[in-house]
Length: 411
Image 1 (cartoon, rainbow, N blue to C red):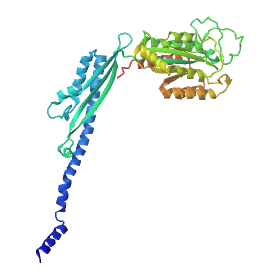
Image 2: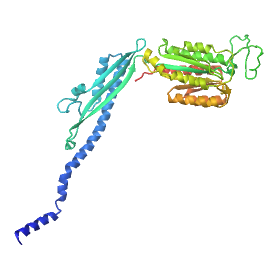
Image 3: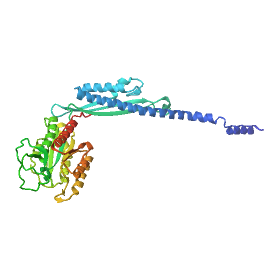
Image 4: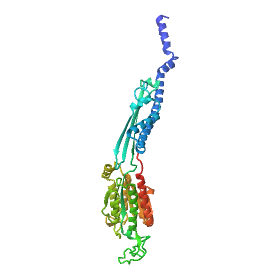
């Protein structure tokens, strides 16, 4: 065998030999596998760190908001409180700035964190505060991930909160009130003077123009409504004695819509409007136009602007919808279904616009109740009143609920 043939035979054996392949493949792939494993670990750390960082900035922002509104702290003191909360909650996983190797976490957090507080004057001596906390955190990768040439990544988190020293929210409310002929009928409540005589209108004698006055005199449904509305307004006046947060309006309807009183500060204009409704109402019933008008008024962007100018707030918006009957007309013509359909469309639009609707069925038939149940924002927003006492109680409850909603602290 020549030397050349021997070399070829040796080379062929090496090429055919597979004994060392696994070792070579392992040597080549092991760094890649280790790097991928390191990436998986660091991805998990990134998710956990991001969550912890967000929780920390949330806590810091809310702590500052509470300190400003509830503890009468200055903006400077509130920033110090926010920073303490931030440092207390961030885990020691890296440095807030830089490479995380030369500076302590606490020192770097001071440089990496921005806390801003915007103060706005409200009506009276009130103030509102808008707090923003943002920070960054450098997460150091493990040695295996660093095989890919990446040492760290910067995590960011931002949180905002709001508060106010005035713990009341603004509101706009529009009343939609039935003044059809059946509202002239009597309730079961008697006048205090039992000798007083009046025409006690009922469903049976309503069309008797020469109805004889008799004693005792029973309070009519329209008189009961006026008392009930006054009860609601009393709750709002108590919550807003300076007329700086509450705006009210009203519209009445029978088989047509009457001119509305526009939203105005306080309750005086709306109460005057309600008290001016005739003591002996007449006509059929069509609620469609009146409800649509109320929604138009409270949903008008100009209404939010008026509140923003005076009290710096975005108002909660309410419609109080009351009837004692069922719709009988639509735009002046007799129609037992069209008004219901159109009123429901407006009620759907109110839900979409996030206008809260309260409804009160006062001695109403089933069809009237069905419409009001549909229009109420929730089941708890629907009231049935079978007498004057229940009607006054319903309107008072609406006033109490909306006044209580004013007293929530916004954050």
